[in-house]
Amino acid sequence: MSATAPTAGTPALEIHGLEAGYGKIQVLWGIDLTVEAGSFVTVIGANGTGKTTLLRAVSGLVRGVHGSIRAFGQDLHGHSPARIVRAGIGHVPEGRQLFPLMTVAENLASGADYLPGAAREITRSRATVFELFPRLAERQLQLAGTLSGGEQQMLAIGRALMSRPRLLLVDEPSLGLAPSLTKAVFRALAEINRAGVTVVLVEQNVQRSLALADRAFVLENGRIVKQGRGSELLDDPAVREAYLSL
Ligand SMILES: Nc1ncnc2c1ncn2[C@@H]1O[C@H](COP(=O)(O)OP(=O)(O)OP(=O)(O)O)[C@@H](O)[C@H]1O
Ligand SMILES: [Mg+2]
View 1 (cartoon, rainbow, N blue to C red):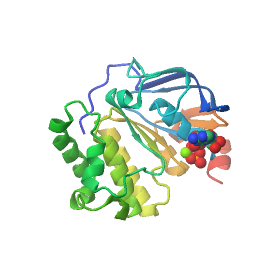
View 2: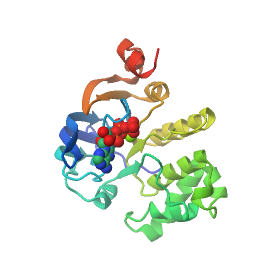
View 3: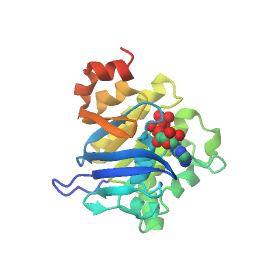
View 4: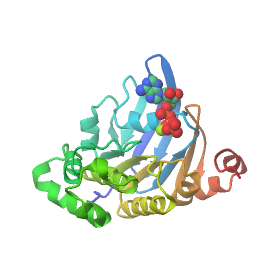
């Protein structure tokens, strides 16, 4: 992994007063959220509470967003998704969104489309991805749609890494995966983070993501209602009752 060292003290992500929705439906109501560079952050919350909308707003995939979004000190508000990728933000979307009739190699290449000097850099990016997920190297010519669920998730993460993000947004990577594969996906995310990439993870596997996270945010009805260290929230009785059924 080759994350550029962040400027000391500048947060990877700084969101103030973020409001977003779809047409007349408002989903996010004044989100304030800061993610320190190099940290591993998780956002938890019930279904339909706006977690995906939050990640999509950062990536420029939701229109008509109000408020301020800065990444590594750079204003992202109103920028195109392509420009946001070039600013160092990678996004592993909910549901993977691979191209099923394209090969593993072609799916990976699509992730480098916005990489400056893509043709030259693509080999190096691909080598990094194959180091993290050797399984993908073995299956380069296989159609993405015929990969197992776990392999597809690895490919979705690999594709996002192709643009060499400094900040990686990951939406529900363990959805539909068996526990052993979930473990492998979390291990990979931890390794990506150790290599210097800031990670913002949205996960239904709350136990695992809180255990891994430096900091966690609880989103309820489009508002951040609680935040703290991952381990703190893991011990919080209200969080345990609402999200861990304990
Ligand atoms: N494209 C869209 N058009 C209209 N409404 C949408 C659209 N996408 C999401 N919504 C609505 O916005 C709200 C928040 O959705 P979002 O996908 O952000 O939630 P989430 O927290 O990611 O949920 P889940 O845990 O089920 O993935 C929901 O009420 C949803 O129905
Ligand atoms: Mg979602």
